[in-house]
Length: 154
Image (cartoon, helix red, strand yellow):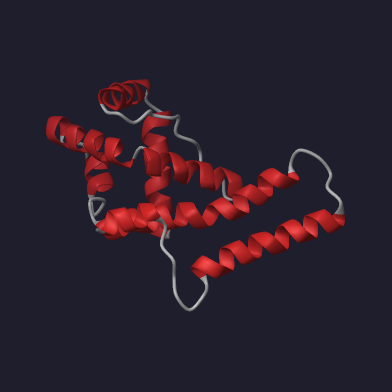
C-alpha cells in the first residue's frame, strides 16, 4: 500500500509541476485509444479524493508506462526510472485495481452524504448495505476478483 501511495504522489507531482510533462502525456494519450483525464491530488483525509486519484491512475496506467519508458529512453530521467521499477509486474497493477475497487465503496458513501442532510434511518441503512458490499467480495472466505484484476492476472 505504501508503494502504491508513493507512486500516486510521484506521478501527481511530476505532472502537476511541469506543463511540459503534462503536454507530453496528453499527446501520448491522444495517440492511444484511452482518454487522459486530469491527474488528481491525493489528500490523506478524503476517501473520495483517494478513489479519484487511484481511478485516474488505473485508467491511464498503460499510457503512463509508455510515457515513463519514453522519458527514460530519451532523457534517462531518474523519476521515470523509479516510476517504471516494478510497475510492469502484474501484481502491482492488480493491487492497484483492487484498491480502486475497494476504495470505491467508501467513496460512494462520501458522495452520498455530501449533497444534503439525510435521515438517520436512511443513512444507517445505506451504510449497512455498503458494509455488506465491501465484506462479501473482499473479506469473506473466498475472495472475488473484479474482471479488471482477472484480466491483468491472465
